[in-house]
Image (cartoon, rainbow, N blue to C red; front, side):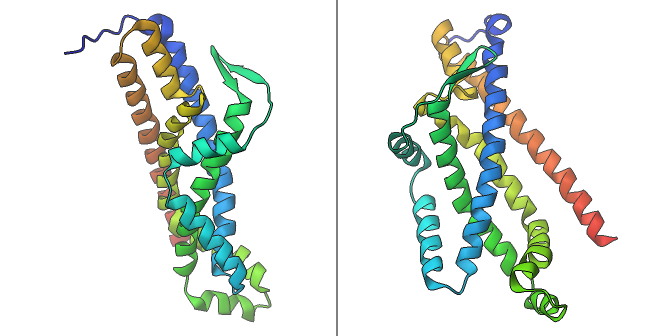
Length: 230
């Protein structure tokens, strides 16, 4: 059985803390752009224009139907850029690797968010759109001011789950050399020749991140529910 010790923690803990910071930043950026892409793709899927429907359907099916790891490697190979390296604590973050990773993760997240948003929009009764039209709102205005706000309230739990998924999936960026939490743990494992202990610490930190995110989202959902029931 593999021996475990955690004597390295006092000196090498910054690898984990800095990795957590990078992971959180990546997740926030990916969820932000994923929500924008997903909303756009959902609207295209609901459009009466057949060409836009086809484009959106192909986008969603391809990105949902292929492994994210494969997408990351393909995206990194195709997107060649020259960007500087910046430091987060003791970790060097290479933007020429990070930017392609962010683009691929955002596109992948957008494909899943598209289905979430589309389902949320379809859950709103047709009477809401008709009422908006009767008030003189154009279709785009009705969608923006009437339908989408209600749809977002309905799909907030699913969006929260997507955020949690992104936090975990960000670990896949280690395959292209992004120094996030998992890569930080692997670096510590290499330095200390401890194959298991650093990975257990990283797993615990991922759990804390996802657990806290889940609890915060639950609190926010309850506040929104109370606001709508008043």
